[in-house]
Structures are given as C-alpha cells and as structure tokens.
Image (cartoon, rainbow, N blue to C red; front, top):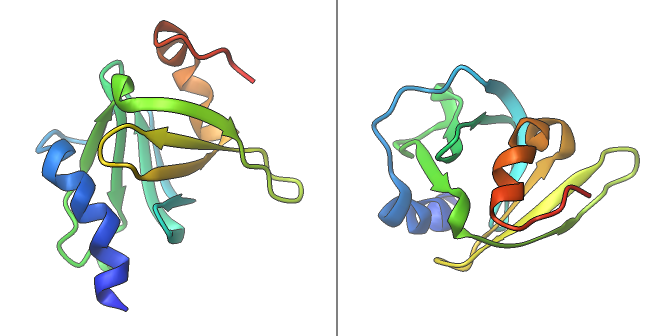
Length: 121
C-alpha cells in the first residue's frame, strides 16, 4: 500500500522536486489526486508563475518531497467534475501522470495556463 501511495509522487519528484518555500497563494489541506492516489484533505497546493507547487500535510508526508511542476509540463486539461465539485484533470507530459484539482484551486492559474495555450473552461 505504501508503495502505491508513493509511486507516482516519487516519479514526479525525480523531475520536479523543489526546496522552495510554499508560495503566498497556497491552499492547505485540499483534496486532489496525483496519479491513482486521492489525497483527501492532505494535499497542499500553491500557484506560482513557475508552476503548480504540491506538498503533503506534514503528518502524512512520509518523506514525500514538495514538487514544483512547471506549466510547460502540462500537455492537456479536461473537466473531471464530481457531483457538485468542478474539477480538472491535468495530464503531464513527463512522466505521464495525471493531477486532478478543483477549479477553485486552479482559478489563480488562469493567466499562467493561458500562456501555455489553454483556454479556461
């Protein structure tokens, strides 16, 4: 179980590990998916001009390092709504991992996504 919990995160960490402090535009204890794992209430997400900052609430991080995924790593975005929650699935180019985040979290990223050619849905 721990292997599955860490697998996609560690794949991302090989390319996108960061030592930077969390950005000012930072949402704590959110729900979202990284690969196959749904981080319910333990995902911290920040939006920066460089990309999406991800970390796990420290009590559950188990050594998972913070990530800063650049906007250019996103190859496709599509809606992934669930009941009354508007969410988006972000497909990364390398490694081929998906992120599912709520529209509210991604709202501050609107201008950064537009520079990559994504229209806000």
